[in-house]
Image (tube, rainbow, N blue to C red):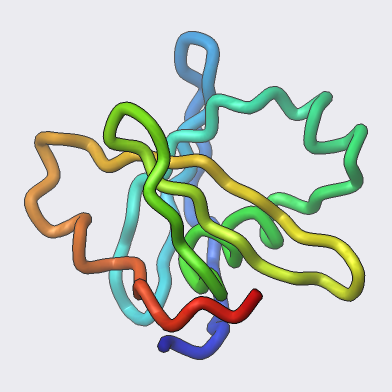
Length: 104
């Protein structure tokens, strides 16, 4: 499983009902669309970097409904759950996240 590394946000674009973040992780540039409102992230005190860590360096990944995945990452006594899906037009995206051993 990959160790937590630095996630550098290089650019942010507003899109319809979402925000697109361009990030660099392990010398690769990724485009990540976040559809959750910032209000919701603030309500739960989730820093955007913690969300990216949960997506890119999860402790556990589960299969969800409709081709989605659920990434889990522990922070103390809390768990960040991030539901995500891959862009069907991005051929290399399925190799970005590890599917390590379950730890819960």
